[in-house]
Image (cartoon, helix red, strand yellow):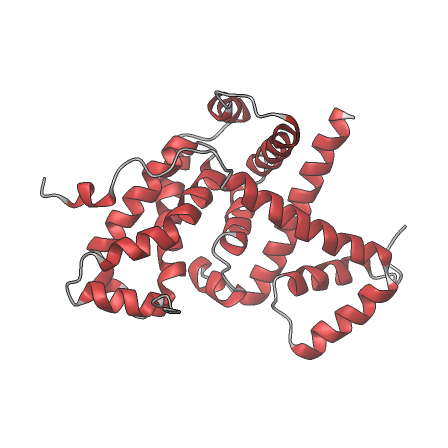
Length: 184
Length: 78
């Protein structure tokens, strides 16, 4: 039997009706991308997990403020973004911190090692970008936010977001190429 | 090698919006026609796609520890 997954709107409605367990579904759906997004905005995986968790707690407590349940993704990202922003203003991420915290306890074999190295290089390149570029890339790539949604969040126009995303992608590509060049 | 149109920045930005799925059908068709003729812009699009895939993978790398604490524990009265 093909049982359709509940929509975000249906989940939010259920939580509002007092079905607290429904919030678990929302957490399961968004937890991986919340942690990934936070990690790629701040560069500290353990802190990213904490910030994602705190964001879910805030979301649960403030769910009444969400006017349209279908817009839960940008709303969650907005909460996470504010928490990451506050964290970053207290402590700027550094590449050294990233390298120390990201070392795997067990080295991966063969292709997995190469893939992991590549992922580390991309993450390091990302952490070298301006915060607004990292934020734009995370909003696009992890939350699939459109230009109009991002514009509302940032208090700007979709045209400006289009330019921001373009510049962010250019900056990431340049950073990756610089790292590739320095290794060859 | 550079964009065949001579307007590299214009097309690079348009290809970026195309990659984001933010163009109208007419604009997207125009970009696709350009991509068929311009290797530089086609390579830019390939880079955008691979950078996106690698960035997402880097954020959600397999083998990372999962959720260690239940969010519900944070909701208990303090």
